[in-house]
Length: 446
Image (cartoon, helix red, strand yellow):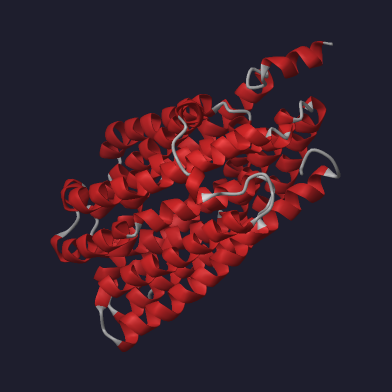
């Protein structure tokens, strides 16, 4: 429980297993890129890199629903409401199964069409289609794992998801090497390795929920959609899912503008994204910790603890950002050579990193405040702030300003500019205090 004790220690203790687990998840994604770049070629590396925005676009809605589920579960767990907690957990599992089936069909059908719309170069198209179709073929495992792991995190258990991700990552790495290097299966082998690894983590997470004796235990006979609980989950989850998907859509459009500069630019940007994936993991972990912390303390009706949690979370998050910026800035070339030795790929990757990393402090603030708002159930507000800045404003920039200064670097600047405006709106909303539930604001007045 995160409703009592030393706050900063709890935030770090909760975040650390999340961080290690996400590092392993990024590790096997990065191994995909390393194996592809070194054993298949730069065109295949471009295919994997350019596929990520599309994957995030299609899967974002379903992951947003899992966020809504985690908020509901953390609040019921903080309030010790056994009956409603059970309804929420079993409805979540049912929704993940339904969503997994739908996502498999949707992803396989529309992948070629969206890749064409993105302006994917002909030399990259075939590999991209193969990789995406294999990836979406395993959507059921992806969603079940995320929903089950989200449930465990919502009740304060971030250690078991870490263990399952470690196992999954090792499986993926071994299969990557076996399928691509030994069996010469090409980019399809990378996709199959990822799907099998996701299946392993999904089975382990679901088994943990079925074996526990705690009040969030899953019983297969009770797995069904409770309409009332589904409405509560969707009311919080759909805005979060829309935020994921719409921002991912803007990233797809940015990726389309990057594709104009060819396979080397795509590969360089994809390599930076892998590095950014590692660098941003602690910030994402702190955000999830803030969501769980806020949700449980709202359930426990503890206003003072929530406010202290925001301040201590910001100190932790900003401290990390100020440490990682000089490291990445000084080691840009060495890090990028892990993914490719081609000069043009390295040039584009370095140009991207030089622009992006200087603004990680804005992301540090945004992640903590966004996590706090989501823990309070204010996902509609986080959606409006995120979509307004990271999608609408970014698209205005791309379509109105970039044509006057046409360059790869001009496209990339769309990211940090909108990070800054997002952070400023987060701070303004936080200071106004309207994200707090009414019973807590009344408590403050008293």
